[in-house]
Image (cartoon, rainbow, N blue to C red; front, side, top):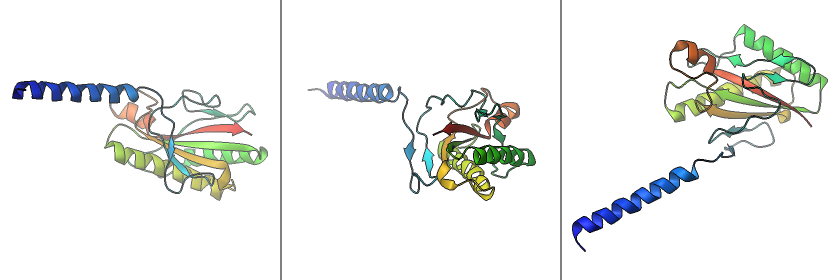
Length: 178
């Protein structure tokens, strides 16, 4: 076999493998739990966008079943610090959860598109963890809370620039009744 034929066969084989890999990534993947995660309010890294649960709207708000809607908690650039508005929202969520002892809450950490995928996944996790820690300080049992990180994978607003990025740096909630 000539050298050109061997190169052509390798190229076709590589291309076929690449196409299969891309096709395999096309479906929704379930989030996978990272070390320390699980039933005790662990953290999960979302490997691909997953469908929203019925209790969460596209804007990131969550309805506790009592008519109250809790919007996303926004963060400053590269920050995990809670604003006064964020603390107020989390206080309302803690109050709703106290009134509904069977409710559980999924906390999603999101980032803007700036930075590497790895950094943004870690930052999204730290944001979700900060929210979880604050809710625990307000009296919510950690076992009723789960954190997810999507990093930059699920932007609330498409586009680049500070106006879009500011809305994508957020924590979102999904309250579920057991």
